[in-house]
Each structure stands twice: as structure tokens, then as C-alpha cells.
Length: 286
Image 1 (cartoon, helix red, strand yellow):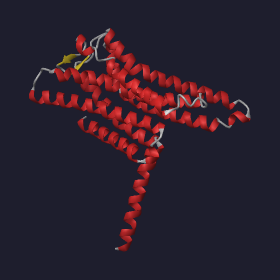
Image 2 (cartoon, helix red, strand yellow):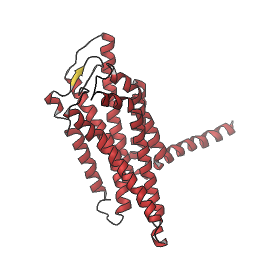
Image 3 (cartoon, one colour):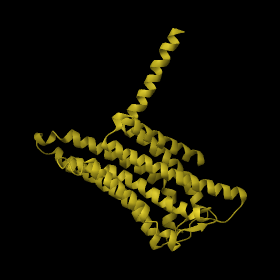
Image 4 (cartoon, rainbow, N blue to C red):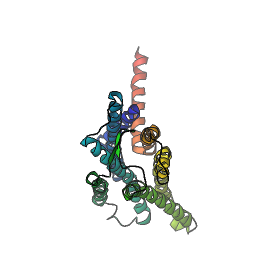
């Protein structure tokens, strides 16, 4: 699990560095991709710290927590929320381009940056109160600090704001775009001039849906334990079991991000081709 998180962090850092230093990536859509990469770095780092803490306590057979355990629990909710909303921002941007192509105000970098800041503020503010209300508690069996899995307002609040809200919103945007494409396909030829552009944006949103689907599918064990806790006691080691699936999902998300983001994919292919062109003449000279 530690290795998978380190790989995920490495891939996220690589994508972020590519966007920063490659001038072809200095566009608004890529800025939103960079935001997703940054949120994933933070989320994977928090999970890595939680895993190391759990492993260290297991090895030393310690069953206690410190203030940092509570903070890590808070950061896990905040960083996960920020990551999910980063994908939602990408979908919203595509939605704006399709439905409001003339309205440049909402497509401006200033507004999109403002939305990024707002989502970050919301993600890190709303779970902050849990530190002081005592909702985040220490679970000795799983060696971590989280909101206990049982039916409670705090848990439902986190589920809706950090997970269900952004994921469902992305699905709604995708379905609206699909419906719009079907409607516009039936209209006059003059309207069909915009169809390739709309289909391109639909394709981008479909890719975002695929990325979130990876997280949803590999997060099914934890989700199952979560809903199970509303009616009965979940397994004792629910987090240890679910992390086997959740942690590697971050690797698959980054691989999908590289595959679906054309500028990132083009950069990697250029570097691979450059190395091949460099190696071949060298071998030929020998």
C-alpha cells in the first residue's frame, strides 16, 4: 500500500511539473488539470502518513494516538473533498463552453481561479469543526483517526459534501451534455457546425466520468462498509481491507489522467521519441 501511494505521488508530481514547465500546457483547461494533480498529491500524501502511522504502531504494538492523528483524519476528509471537486471544476468548465460559448466571463482565468480557490476553501473549512467537536476519534483496530462508521449527522455531512455531491454533479453534467448532443444533432445543418466542438467537450467530460468511476469502483469496499454501518457493525478491520483497493486507485486515476489529457500524453510521447532518435544514431555510429 505504501508503494502504491508513493507511485501515485510520483506520477502526480510529474504531471504537475510537466504542466508548469511545458509552455504548450499553459492553458486554462490544463490549469484545472494541474489543480487535480495537486489535490491528488495532497490526498495521497495524507494517506501515506496515515499508513505509516498505522504500520509503525502495529510494529511497536502501540495503541494510542496523538494530536497529529486527529489532524491527519481531518486532512483526509479535506484533501479527498478537494480532489473530487477538482474533477467537478473540469466538468463545469466543459459545460460552460458548450452551453455558454459566447459568455467569456465564466470562461476567463480569473473566474476559474476564483472557483478553484472557493472549492479549496470549502474543502478545508467544512470538516475543520470535527477536530473540536470530538467527531474524529481514534480507532485502535485500524490505527487511524476518523469519524466512526455509524449513522450520524457528521458522517452523512462528510459523505454528501466530500463524495456524493461532486460525483453526482459530474454525472448530471455528463447526462445533460449527452442529451444536448442528441438534440442538436437533429437540428439544421447550420447548427451542426458546432456539433464537432460540442462532441469534443462531451468526450472530455466522459473522460472525467471515467476517472471518477475508477475511484468509485475501487472505493466500493469502503462504501459498502459505510452503508453497512448504518444498520449493523462493520468488520473490525474495515479500513485495512478497503485501503487495499482505495490506495491503488490513485495510481489508476493518474494513469487515466495521462492517457486522457492530450498535452500530457503528447509531452511523454515526444520525450520517448526524442530518446529513440538519440539512441538510434549513436548505435549506428558504432
